[in-house]
Image (cartoon, rainbow, N blue to C red; front, side, top):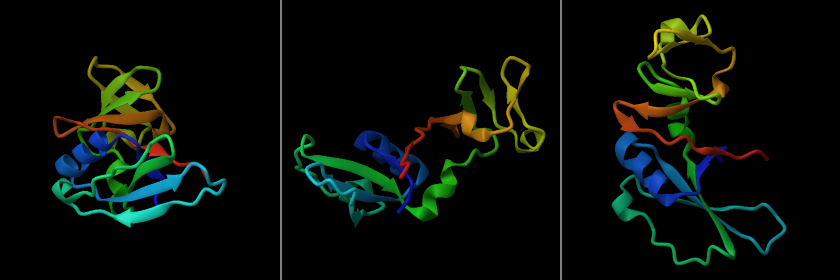
Length: 135
C-alpha cells in the first residue's frame, strides 16, 4: 500500500480530477489496536466514488494514492515549489541537478534534499501534497 494519502476528500477529488491521480480508499476502525486498513479500489472518475456514511469519530478514512500514481508526487519542470522556510521558486530540472531551484525573485536556493520542498502549483493549477504514512 502507498505511503502517500489524503484525509481530505475534496483534495483527493481535486487531484483525481485535475491530475488523474488514482486512489484506493482506506478505512480503519479506531477501536482496533491494530493498524490494519481495509482497502477498497475506487473508480478513476470522482462521480463514481463510494459515498461514505461512516462515523469519523469511530473510523479513520484515508485516500491512499495508487502506486502507479506515486510518480506524480515528484517535481516536474515548471512546478511552483515552496521551501519549508517560506522560499518559493520554480522547479527547473537542469538547475536542480546542481541543487538549486530557480526563484521568482532572481535568486536561487540551495537544497541537497527535495524533501524540503512541496509542490504548490502545477500547470497553473493548485497542487495539494499528500500526507506521508510513517509505519
